[in-house]
Image 1: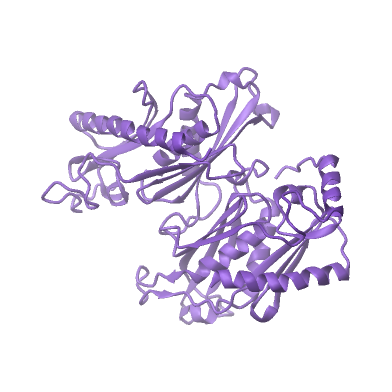
Image 2: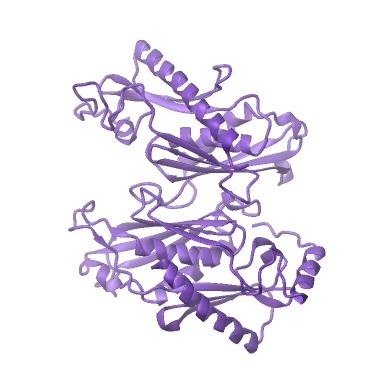
Length: 257
Length: 238
């Protein structure tokens, strides 16, 4: 991504709006855009989901491969999460090897899903030391109007929950649903005009400062945190967004069901 | 082309494995304005192929060395999503997608009125999110709809269809099995208003008569698809 020019006009405007407790599209500080989640939409993937949040659209697809377990973990399969933001998603995304931004995106989403333990890697083993499943979650942005993190995380867990292990095609048994025991959910907050807002749009990201991503599992256990971009925040600010994340994650968890 | 002659793909009634007659197309649906942040966009579902195309621009062409003083350049990126096929595709550089990007760009530059936008760039991003067979045709056809949706002036639309041969029968719009085990594949990019061509590839084995039949199937199919494109653009959200 080439570094976009941020006009001071945009930053000033966002600061003014924040003063009046408003946002570019009239949302409240912690208001969310309209959200739509669809699963089973990609015929070639073993599990899939499309998430639409306002003008942000992402796809997630799950594929399976057979792997030889690692020598130090002969009873375990693997989970891989890869993220691509190709030029289709917006004029600020360019072709070429993944940018640091895209890599950060994929890794933060990956950590939330992996650390929640929602996929039991022992269960992915077929023959210890010889054969195991590798689950690959590919995240693909279609339209970037901000907050790709939350869209990817939601599409990712929904796609995994809709996935079928293609055992018959690989001749290693019967097809069965992939077991996903937990529902890790990510909530992202951007500092815009001096305060944190939830579910930022692209313009708010552009004219904002630091961002914080929180992934909470069932029972509000924290599974991943990430602070990105330049900026300083206080413990009080963090406490405030953490409180909101708890209630929002509970809402989103119902949508995933 | 595999040329596995022992795979039976045409039944005793002359119908294909998916029930089509030799000259039939797969079902096609077209939607425009599907990417809110793009200047023009199109989703085309063709059989179980699905292509999503975004057009951005005309915009400043950079780096400067790609600029043309007298015209615009079109930057085409064709890509198959990792989950678009039965076996996962590893993301990243690959020669096939580079070639398809290039021939698609060559086709589109033949119809877009480039001289109207000197020193600028029009970006066309083609993502195949589900692949069956003929993704290059779907990508190119969807790209021309997305360019029209973006309001970019063109002399004509481009419709791309592939015909080929299976079990010695010439058939229109090959599906996955026919593409894998058939004996020939002839994709063409046709301008519906003049019948001219801007894209042509072929591999396999066709007699002069079979070649003529495949060519005619493609031209007839293009006219059928053209009607759907016009409907989508007239009735679209934008």
